[in-house]
Length: 251
Image (cartoon, rainbow, N blue to C red):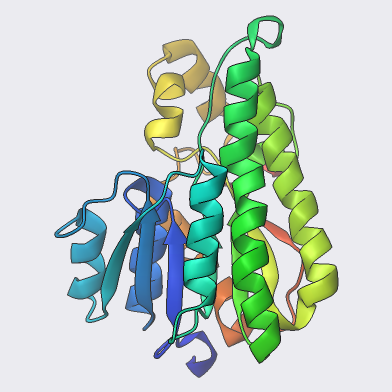
């Protein structure tokens, strides 16, 4: 379908170094987009994600930014908004999780997660999105979570941030709907963020028992949703949080 063709588009993917972000960057490149990958520890050259993107025949640019630093996030937003070649697709995927029972969840962990997973997302999107609105073109995709719908266990900061992402998606869509603002809510995906769960035999078994698909998700399971929401095929899709969860929320 030509509507899914992203040839000539420039995509920014945050948290692109590994896991879901890397898979999203690879999917966008395979659909035709050039990619700017952003991560706090992204290698300047020859990273895995760079090889993915260039292997698909597209260009790649590495950018480092610490999303726990508000000044760095604002600087990144200004740099992206002022580029000669404008950003067509912004994928807000960078995130962090801190696990501790609520009674012992420290202020430092709470503030760190809210900064990285919510405050930075808004600051970056405000800068890049304003440039999109000014020229009348652009797509924004947030990475939400199943905990955008549920409370989770021992992750109060993460749950609060991901609920905030769903609300932010709706709020921005109300103002920027012609430009496409949506979110993807990954299910239980086999990444670093879920390693502790997968290493716990009882918790892993309980999770698998609830997933109708019968398996943990893979980062590449997010590819189709990412390309769809970044493309003209989703021109009339606005303000949604799309679960990609193997049927978890249907149980």
